[in-house]
Length: 306
Image 1 (cartoon, rainbow, N blue to C red):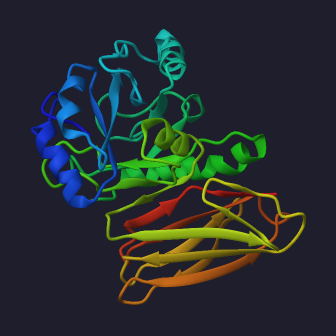
Image 2 (image 1 turned 180 degrees about the horizontal axis):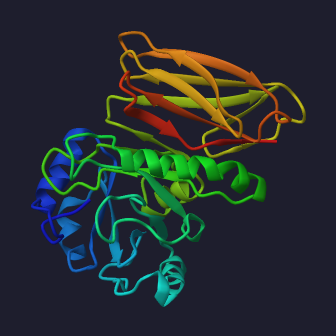
Image 3 (image 1 turned 180 degrees about the vertical axis):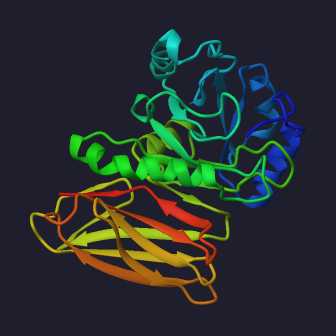
């Protein structure tokens, strides 16, 4: 998210922190464009109930990326493009300091917004970017980013290294924070724990705090959740999905074979569905939940099956 230190934004840290608490968010990430100058302003607004992750949006000439988990006042160089062949050294700099590197809004429809660096150079991919330049919470650029990420999963999972998906509101203006947001299964509310959860793919993306999603895969007496690896020993797998908050929506399950299961939600938006498979049939399963107009309500990272 952005305060008035970023171009096109007019919010103060006080306003953003208050909005985060009103929404019930546990953590936020401050990612000003190409500067760490605002890091010191956040101290009075963080607390036991609200973690503030320090970061930066690095707006290079050929795509933007997020450096998350920076040290106070740690800045990342941004004046280059893909032909300069230097982005790797800046990604490594962030990782050496314990940070996380995220490919931001890879299909954003404006100059420099479209990412020309490969997804696999980053630790995670922002497949859902907020509505800071639109009235819609889900746009064609998000659809393109999700499709590209989804197509790569089968190959990447087979290779043993895949990039988790995240979603960020990219809030610039009032009313945008939290739409969407990433829900992380973390051991504690700390920067290290939250980033570890994102890095491992132990996360899913919600349109708003009204949406909940629970995805598990069970084989015999073993159960795996989103971002986890379920070793089945050849036993049949039951995938269970529980959703709330997407009225009359549709749950779809996706594997290396595309969409393998659909389930319609009732008018109140709450429902449960199950699907059976084996590790011989697929190496992963992930979930999307869409509104009747196909706008996204929630989506998950995969559960890895073997």
